[in-house]
Length: 111
Length: 116
Image 1 (spheres, rainbow over the protein chains, first blue to last red):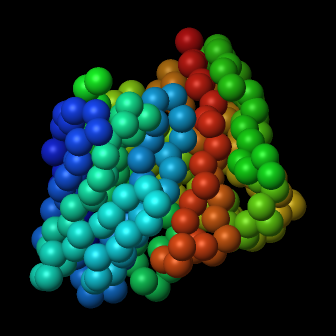
Image 2: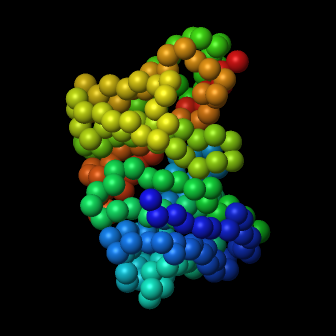
């Protein structure tokens, strides 16, 4: 399975943008990049996913490098509620039906 | 919709005891999963199911059993509990097993289990 590498922790001031990086240098052409986050004492929740093009939704944006060896999750204005562990996960196009979680990036939002 | 529900929220077991963690979903999802999360770690897959009557092992299945008699329910059985099974257990479900938005997984609130 292709691996991902994320920083252990990051901090951001409230209402400022946050860029959470993920390296996946061994990604294959059929791997999709998914992001989940886990709020304190809760189960993970889906944030966003993409293949090659940048993606936007109401929660965040996903910027994917042209060579697909890295990606960045962008929270446009961090709120206290965004404090969580963020996981970058690769999923095979052919239908891998489970998620391989690493240790993720713990985001602290400073009021 | 209640989504994915899990019971109990907390449980303390003695070594050698058995118990069943309950999981139910009301989204008519085909796929269901059980994960465990040890302190400070990511989630690891225990078992999963692609539909009623079909289950398969994940990364860490030893010491656990599952069954899937209905679409809605996916209980996880611990036989002969051991301290190494102290963890938080999450159940999840998804419509499909692929990469579409509709295949993303929805997680329950978790069960915190301590084995003493």
